[in-house]
Length: 157
Image (cartoon, rainbow, N blue to C red; front, side):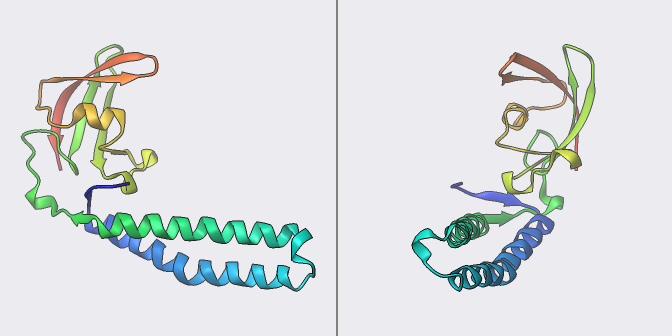
């Protein structure tokens, strides 16, 4: 990820907490696993050691990515959000023009996206299609099955 990551204070705090946990507990667990594997003898034929080293590499990669996200984070205040058009942190009620289904989503940064909580990323196809639209406008979203059209019914916080 590159560029600015707009986040809520809640999202920033959550990501910071996860990062701190990985840096402390996660690293300690990996170091312990490597130490135990090292005690089992010849490292050239030790699959457990190789797996622990791979896990260490993946952990460090994840830590690095999270640090990048946090270093580029800009915390947005909900009270400063302009609801005249769809922007990051807006709650948007949309209507699928094809089947009439109405859905409500919060547009958030990639790191805060959670479909179960109805939070979609502004970089997702739907998020990109909705950005900048006003109530009554139709957003066309490109999907693998073809274009879908969504009418903007309401914009809030």
